[in-house]
Length: 237
Figure 1 (spheres, rainbow, N blue to C red):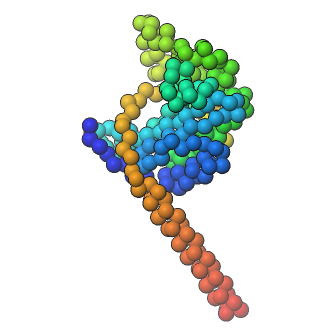
Figure 2 (figure 1 turned 135 degrees about the vertical axis):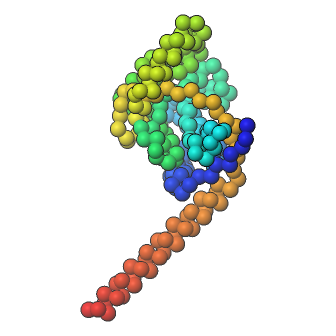
Figure 3 (figure 1 turned 90 degrees about the vertical axis):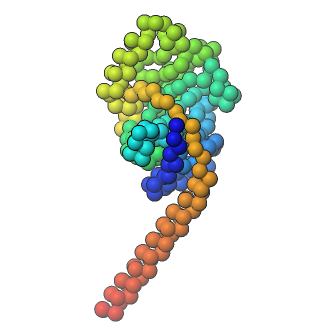
C-alpha cells in the first residue's frame, strides 16, 4: 500500500482550532491529532463514555482525488471498556448532517450532541436505546443504529448476511442522523470502511501557528485600511 501524505487545507485547519478550543472547555481528551487522524474520548451527561476516531482514507488508484475523512463513533458505560476495546464497547451510527463541512466542525457537532447525550436521546431514539441498555447486554451488541440493534448472534447467523446487505442498500438511499444544532432526521447511512494505518504528521502545530499569524496579519491590514479611510474622510471634510 502506498503512503499518501495528506495535508489539511485552511478551512480544515481553522476547524481543528475550533475543535481544540471546544475540547479544552468541555474536558474532551485528545488522544491523537495529526494531519490525517483525529481521536477523542469524553464522558457524556449520562456518565457514559464516547470515543470518536476520524481518519483520511483514499483509493490507491486516485490518491488526491479520492481522499476523504471517515468518522467512527464508539460508546461504552465504562471508560476502561473503550480504552481496552472490550466486548462491552459498541459502535454508534451517528454522523453529521453536512459532510461537506471541514472535519473539525463535523466532529464538534457530534461531540456537542454526545456530551449532552440525555437531552439528545430525547430526539434520537438510537441513542436512547444505548443509554438504557445494561452493560451486560452490550457484550452481544455490535452496532446501535436507528432501525435496529445489530447483535453478534445476528451477524453469526448465515441468513443475516443477506438481510445486512439489504439494510445497507436501504440506508445508502437515506440521509444521515443529524447531530448537534443542525437539522434532525430519524434515518442514517450505514457504512463499512477499510481503515488505513494513520500517518502521523508532526508539523500540524506549525501549520496552525502559521495560519494564526496569517489571520492576525489580515486583521492588522484591515485595521490599517480602516484608519486610512477615516483619515481620508477627515481631510475630505
